[in-house]
Image 1: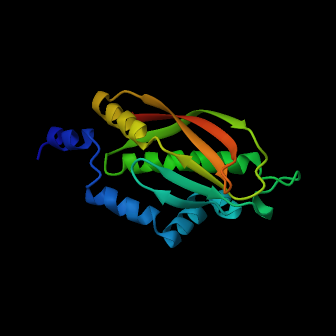
Image 2: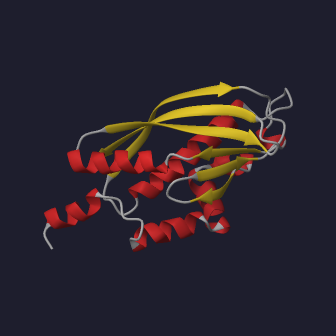
Length: 174
């Protein structure tokens, strides 16, 4: 198979590829994610953040309210909330990149609006996986950098929104 034919197969995201299914299974396996946090994101392990749900459209990531994620004002530290929001979008991006060759990804902008004090566990939800996949597809097809702006919303168990975060991801095929 020629290099062009191989590249053509990578242009459009295929959720049924074995590599993608394997990555999805790994992301849904608690001990593998704990190992990932320990080796790649130790602050996330320290704060106690957990990936609780992921598919190709949506990702949920929880940040507990405990001594390690708390600030002196008895709420969840803003950096812990921003990290959880970034993870909820970044996990979808990692899934979109799986099996697609060498593609760089980088957060190029972030804005957060904190609307309520986070005094219990907060779940950050991103429901824009399709936008991420489309941006990665376009980056591969055009061989030019692409950006996509994604929203993640943090809610406590009672439904109260604590934080709305907007992240701009940049993707470029190498």
